[in-house]
Length: 275
DNA sequence: ACCACTACCTGAAGGC
DNA sequence: TGCCTTCAGGTAGTGG
Image (tube, rainbow, N blue to C red):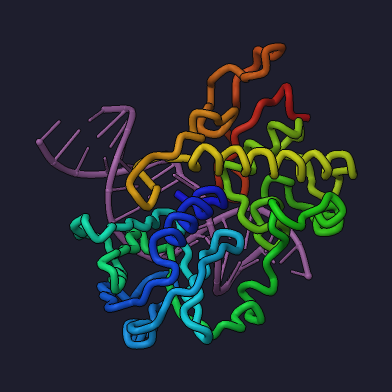
C-alpha cells in the first residue's frame, strides 16, 4: 500500500490520535516481522508518553519520551487502524502489534505479508545506517542538482534509479511511473544520460504529484488504508499506473499505455509522450 | 562497485 | 466449486 503520500496520511492520523498520550499497555502478537520485534518491546514502551510523530521517506518515526523512538515501516501490505475510546477494537488476523493509550484510544499495526517492521531505537537513530544513507526528502530539500549528481554515474534506467531510496526518499513504483509520465521522460532511458532540464522536471513533478496525492488522501488500491478506515482517492488521478492498454490521457496522443518489467517491477508509460 | 534478480509472505484475481 | 498461476504500493541479500 504505502509510498510517501500514504505513509504521510497514516502519520498524520496517528499524530492526531496519540500524541501527548501515555501508553497503558501493548500487545505483541508476532515478533517475526521483516525486522525482528524486540522481545521487550512492550516493557520498554508501557508507561511512556508519545511526544511526537514524524516521517522520513516511507518510515514513521514515533518519538516516545526523550530517549526512545519507535520505527514503523508499512512494507507492501501494512496498515494502521485507530480506534477512539468510544469505538471497540475489532481484532484482525494479521494484527501484529496493538497499542492501548491511557484515554482509551487504541491503534493496531496490521500487515498480512509481514514485509513491514516496527522496532525500537535510541533517539539518536538518525546516526544509524538505515537513515544516514537515505536520500533527500522530495517535498523538502531535494534539488535538480542533487538528482543530477546522484545519478550521474548510473547506468540503470531512470525508473530503477528513482526507486532507489538513496537517490530520493519515499518514491515508489506508482509515483515514479506518474512522475516520469508528467516529465515526458522514458522510463527506459539511462539515468546518467539525463540533462539538467530533465532533472528539473523530475523534481518539480515529484513535488506536484506527491502533494496532489496527499491532498487526495493518498491512493487506495486493494483495501482501505486511512487510520479511520476511509479511502484515499488519488488512484483515480493516475495517468499511467495500472492503465496498460488504455489510451494515453494527453489529448493530442492516441497511443496506448504500455506495461514493461524493469528490475522485476512493472513500469507503465506512454511510448509516444515519454522519449 | 554496480545492477539485476531473488527471497521474504499472504491474499486477490483470473484462467481452465 | 476448486485448483493453479500470476501479480501486488518494499527492501535486503546474492551473485554475475
